[in-house]
Length: 180
Length: 149
Image 1 (cartoon, rainbow over the protein chains, first blue to last red):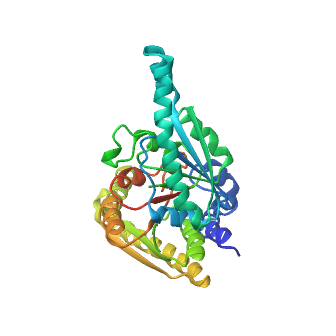
Image 2: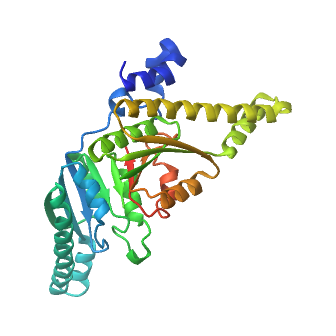
């Protein structure tokens, strides 16, 4: 008997007997199926970034390298703030804002790529104006795992605390998640 | 690499252990299965039982019985996991402590030389809810957290 079927039998089937199927359906919120208990094979990793993220540690790169996966760095500049600056100041001021943020994004992604590639990860990059929550949640459908920096979307990255945006992402996604 | 795997008896923590196993195989990592038993949990269960059954005269007995069951149950869980890991030649140990769950986890995570914490996504709550423990410890630990969905 496999580990998972043995586990389910030990914890539930032996207890509820013939009512197992009904119980499994009614208590689905608490009881994963055998398939759901199997760890996912991690082939594609989503790694959202923004101006608040300062970098990665060697330990994190070691961990991500373990999967020998494709890692997509997704650097997002807040489209709403960009639009507000364009409207309130000038289109050029909006462009200056975007260019400044994306210069940082390029240097951040350079550093992360330098850390990840020697460890076996294949790094891909995207950089765009968007929504730091919605665009990430939408993208997760195509990935097996997500890495969320604690300071992603933070107004006070120096505090090192988990930002409200990172917390929302951790609560919204249904993928294996690394928070660092 | 040393992995701290948080076990609370939920099915999601089993999944966390399986991810740890997957990682340990690739990295030749050492696994520590860690569980915290909080006396307040057995107290709360005994109190709920006594108020609903109108049999509060034996509340202390219920509490100690529930406490013994909690210990036995988590011990059994961990033993099964250790057997599974042993079969795959993974170096694994287990540790059960008593106290406040978040405090004990933070103490262990920050002082035990670990590289990663691995935990179930929902604990004993419904699958749509992110584990309260994650919310409680995420600002306090210095190492990455892997949440097993």
